[in-house]
Picture 1 (cartoon, rainbow, N blue to C red):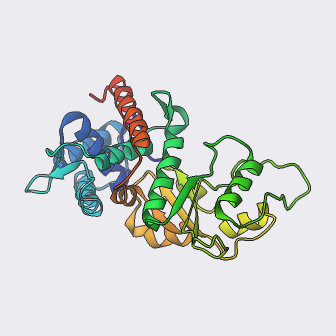
Picture 2: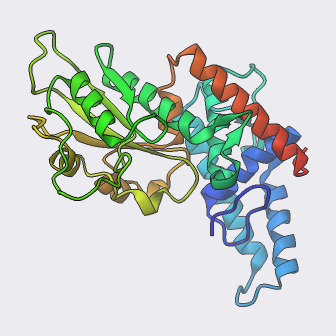
Length: 310
């Protein structure tokens, strides 16, 4: 089971989990070394009395090395948004001394939105962290598609049932007809996995354009939902007309995804936006969204301080 705050990782944690732990420790304590992680894992080993591991120290050293490799990847993947830096030895993680940029703030939000239990802790400062993720996903999708692109939120964070949402989407896309339930029974779906939509319009407003349907997930259980959104199925299920060119699929997550599984993830997730890709593209985000991200993240920081993470 993935580690969740205010708890701590275990010796069975992945390098990505340990990297998140090191980053969180650095946010609260100013620094974290690979040696400290090894010592922490060794203490957990002793307390848990793990059986079946020949040399825990050797295993823990390997885990901390893999953790630092993961941290190096993150620093390269979003260089102007990574809030941390390593010392010349490459074994000590420190807070960057050049201030906290907007991108670094977004990185911190995504880090907290990964490791907090979002079923219980998603509301911070009166703001819903999962709704913020959808707003951020729409902003990043628009940025990725380019200057002419349009992007908007479709998902559960918006008022109205799926009927009103589909009608509004068709109006925006200028194709697809209206809402129509392929079944004769009652409608139980609210968004059917669709959270954000992006497209590149033409001035002629005719059908046949690049369109992307996206799903957004905080936390670490996103693997379980990666198959849910099926863009062509969504169109056939809920629209009276058609979208002439089948929409592409995109998936947005708060976590930093495992590169060893990257290709397989993208087979089912489509155009994949993990934490580092989101931060890399966060060059222009509306001030109101930035304000919400900052308020939510600061409140989450205070919440963790109450848990003893100071």
